[in-house]
Image (cartoon, rainbow, N blue to C red):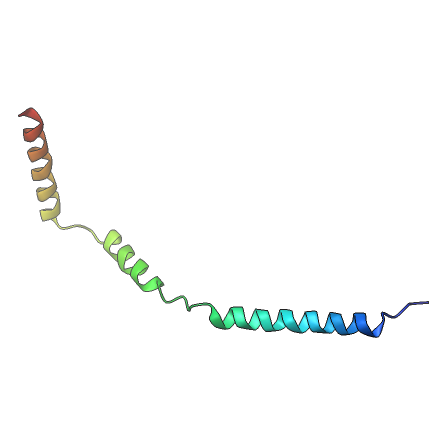
Length: 72
């Protein structure tokens, strides 16, 4: 035969379940929206774009300048 919990114990269980539901709803409502993905995609677009030939020309100039300064 199954023994039923006392009224006090049953009341405590109900209060704990309700508290967990309220906590879950509050955490869900207070969590900021994930709107910070746009800057990540902007950076991804920059990385995926093919650089112009001027980029390599400037890069070679800076390498030359660095070698020249290292010799002095």
